[in-house]
Length: 335
Image (cartoon, rainbow, N blue to C red; front, side, top):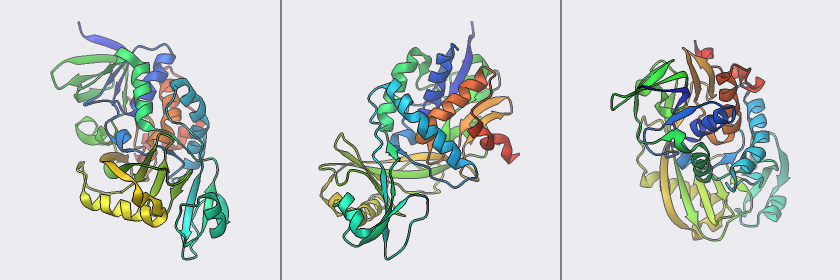
C-alpha cells in the first residue's frame, strides 16, 4: 500500500525539521524527506547569529518576533548553545555603521572587548543579539521528530497531494511542505524564485577572542562557550558550487584578524561552504503557493527565522491563520 501522511515535508534542514516538529505537536502525522543527511546544507555552514540581516519591508518585525520565540524554542530542545551575548559592530576611519543600536566610542569599545583592533574608532552595541549552535539545534530536532525523518530520500517530483522519490516510490499526503532550501527551484519547483547563494565559513579553536559577536561590514566573529569561534561569511553567486576555496579562507581570516587580532592565534579546524536560498528581494517565502506550503528563501536568516516559520507552517497545516508577521512574505508577492 502507498504510504499516506497528514503532511510530507521536503527538506531536512533546520526549517524543515522545525516545521515537522511543530506539526507533530499539533497532532499531525508527518514524514520528512531529506535528499542527503539532515542539516548538512546551509544549516551546516551557518554561524547561528540571531540578528536581522536584510532590509526587506516588514523584515524587522518578522525577525524581532522570531527572536522573541527563540528562548522558549531553545529551552524545549535542550542545550543547543543559545545565549544572548550581544553584538558589537566595529567602525574604522570615522565611519559609522548603519542600523539601530547604541553608539559607543573607540575607548568604550575596547573597554567592552579588549581584543578588538586598536584603531577601531567606535561601534554600535546591540545588546539583544543572540547566537545558537545550528548543528546542535539540528541534532536536537532530529531526535525530536524521530522516525518521521527519512535520509537519502531524493524527491524528484512534487505535487500538492504527494511526492515521488528517485527510487520510483510515492508518498501521499493531505499537504506537502516545500522546505528544500536552495534546491527548492531545482527539479522540484522551477517557477519558485529561489536561487543558490554560496557562503563559506571557518571554524577555529583556541582561547576565545571576544565575549560578544564582533562584526564589521566585511566579516563576523562568533565566539562560543564551547571553545569554538566561527568566522564568516562569503556571499557568492556561484550556482550550485559547494567547493571550499583557499582564497575565501585567506580573505575571511584576514578580515577577522583585522577586526580582532587575537584570531591570528587560533587554530583553523574546518572550512565549510553551504548554499543559502536567496530570493529577488532577500526576504523569505512563507505561505501557500500552487497548492503547496512553501517555507524557503530564508537567505542568511534561516536559523533566526526557524521558530516563526515553523509556527506559520503548522498553523497553515491545521487551517489556522499564521502569525501576522509572515504576511508580507507570501510567495505570491512575486506573481
